[in-house]
Length: 71
Image 1 (cartoon, rainbow, N blue to C red):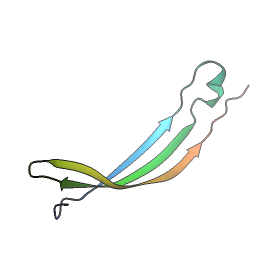
Image 2 (image 1 turned 90 degrees about the vertical axis):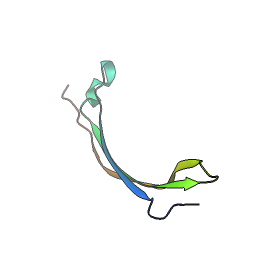
Image 3 (image 1 turned 60 degrees about the vertical axis):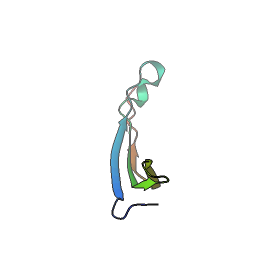
Image 4 (image 1 turned 120 degrees about the vertical axis):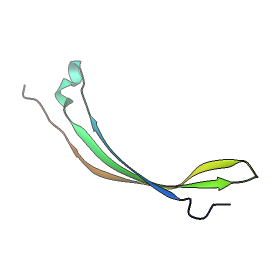
């Protein structure tokens, strides 16, 4: 059973920036951006047993950039 009006939309924006040592240092400063949207609901299977459920989850890749260092 899903409670009426208990749905929440969670929107997460994240950006991952790489900082790598050694032979992969040429990729340092590269980044990936993503936007994750999820519908969350509160459900109850039995009395007193509340659960938080992720109903769906969409991921939108916002973009990426690769910065190559000289040398």
